[in-house]
Length: 360
Ligand code: SAH
Image 1: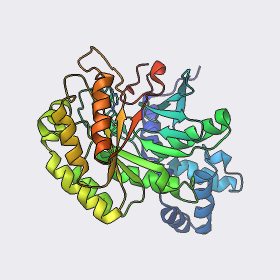
Image 2: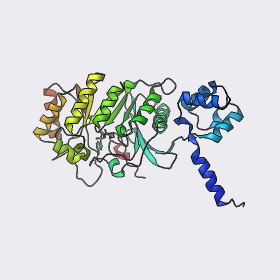
Image 3: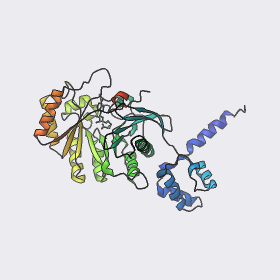
Image 4: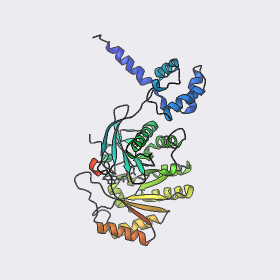
């Protein structure tokens, strides 16, 4: 066995660390890189296509690029692809991927099939910046934001699985996996740009929903940016006191600020908002909770999704009785508010809303 001196190892490692993830470059930056290195800028287009349309995992794959150029790329860059480490399949057809990132951290994403569509539920952060008491991911704390390509790769992986197992491409995307997408807004936006670009997956932004606990400043920024995807807000209570007790960050971003931001959003985008809402026993199942929600719904055009609670632990939270949920439905419908009851999917493999915490 040949012994390699330790300093050479660390040297090699530090060299590696200096290599940039090539997918962090825009097409223009790639074109400029080739020009600066005495090649044609057109080479940048070819490499970009390999990376984003053909999904190359290594420079070796880029067969219409000369060996010397591939070597030059290898010397300067890395391609940090995600790896699906483990795939679990629920008895209802839901698939959960444990996705390993280049630095060894793991996030989860979920494929949810229905008779007519396949939805990808993707993560935007490792862990989460927020502290919702009823959510398993919140217990992990935020470890880091995902890069645009790490978000994009989750979608590509689910698109592949959808074609393989359900014979159809992915049709919808929801940012309801791990993390708070608006706390990683720039990268989420870049990922969505790639997902919707013709040199990416070419998906319509109308089939993408970004779900947030409600960060007013960023909701306004999204409106200013004229984004075309849909917005869902995890409301869970329209009474500050109650909301703060289950979603403590509501203290910093109270409902009045959220209301302002949502009015601004609707004024600019004319896009109806979805409120996600779980009804818990003894927490938000009173008549005044329903009245407060009805009032909140009067501010901007919206619909309400009543989500089933997915227990995560010791029983501090319990799904309210069906009688309480019926009262919500009746109350909302009597005022002309659209309400859907959403059943959980993939519960048996911990793939349902709020259960993503990478138990393995
Ligand atoms: N941070 C974003 C997206 C991730 S959470 C957000 O808050 O919207 C995705 C959805 O799952 C949110 O509506 C959230 O409130 C809901 N959720 C979290 N924990 C849950 C649980 N245990 N049962 C049901 N829904 C849950």
